[in-house]
Length: 264
Image (tube, rainbow, N blue to C red):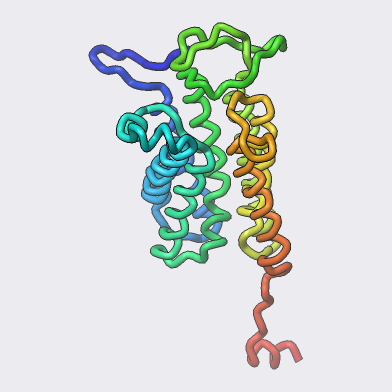
């Protein structure tokens, strides 16, 4: 693995480099989605703010998973370059997006629909950073042909293990592709906003829950890891939002009196 790139006197952590790359690519995806929806907003600024909020949320969620260790010596844990939780990143980024949608005067569900494919792409590329740095996000030992060892990783292991960051990269890129396609179809069919975001919550929740089965995270609630519990909450939120809060069809515009007279 390659935790750091050494370019002359510079030392660049590959994890941070891939997170930055993920945010940059996600900005292009979001700008393209804004364009097809007729939204005039700066995707690069939005992704930058939401990305920073997501990183802060991911860091805080990770350190608070072990509150006793955190409160015993909080500062080294807060400034460490390693240890980020997906669900904390989701919460931080989600809160920032809602604030940005309000500031830009864009309907929240329309805004979240547009952001969903970009979020999938950004997360997928960020996971390549986990893979390159060998930061311990890999899975349990395996004898499968594609099992890998991470002897030079930040969290080294000489056992052949599941390369779960690669699994997540493939899964989230596929999810992003699906969200982009259904987003285009819903726009053509004039479906109510919010459906793409619901699909994002359900698909990413299912994907993360399945990956956690072969991850090394400690178990807490009913034999599940914290990430699996958060994933179930994501799936349930997506389903409840879709079935109970979204309109089934977009409201039809009433024809004006002039149009009625022309039609007679």
